[in-house]
Length: 358
Image 1 (cartoon, rainbow, N blue to C red):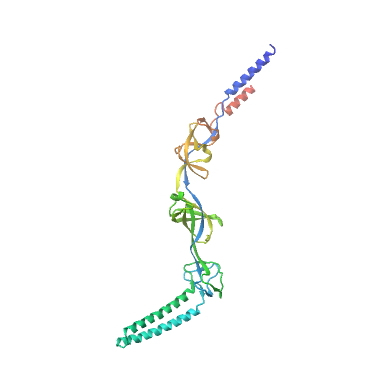
Image 2: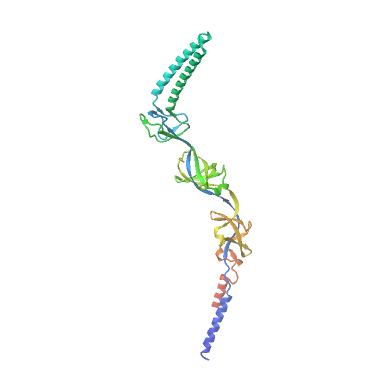
């Protein structure tokens, strides 16, 4: 009997403790909620493009000849029609003078034959022959003038010239580059996009470009042309945008990161942390009274920490934005400012403390 009494007492104590533990209520999770609202989303398209001059031409020597004069400074600005350089033209001027003298002589002879022909002393054949000689002499003079003009290199449009690589007096072969003239008042920006995104862009659409040389300065422009032919190898289409360049900050050949500001819209949005994933499905916890209901939603793009919600909830519904890890479907929750639930951490702790003190 003496041995059974301690055992029975211990068993009763353990049973009492176990019963008290089973009756202890679960803590009501504290969450934050807010009404779901619309946020601006845009289907931005990122690409990399190369800057090109609005107009650019390499001026080359038309013939093998000596450089007689140069009329531009390194990197200087030239206007349309301005003389860039001249080649030696002494021989061509002499040929022009000879052709002009022959043309005058042939014209004088033609005048005499015409007078004789009018009085019947010259045949029509001799008149026709002299007319041909006059025309030939004039053609020779025109050819000499053209040769002189070709040896005067002019700017076809206004722009900036490249660094000079030739000197006066040098004999350069035909085709040698004399200067490159570039019109960079605006920049053509060429980039490619996948054919799958072709439906998201159109001419006139705004773009934003950033260069490594000016990382904190975006350059705004618009799409001017979309190539009508898709590259069959890369399955990409070439797009050309125009960027104003009044201060000449952009240079031809620069590499720029392009952001196409595609379709913009207002859509319902939820914070990324408010979404719960399960396989390929996404869920939000919608608050009904003080009960969190798990609702399957359709999602779109992610932007600035927000996820586009395209279906499953309605505007104005309250969703749980913080504390979703503590929830299951149908969980009772409490919000900041709510009184502690009976039997919760606050009240249960105080009751137990009072009993212990008693």
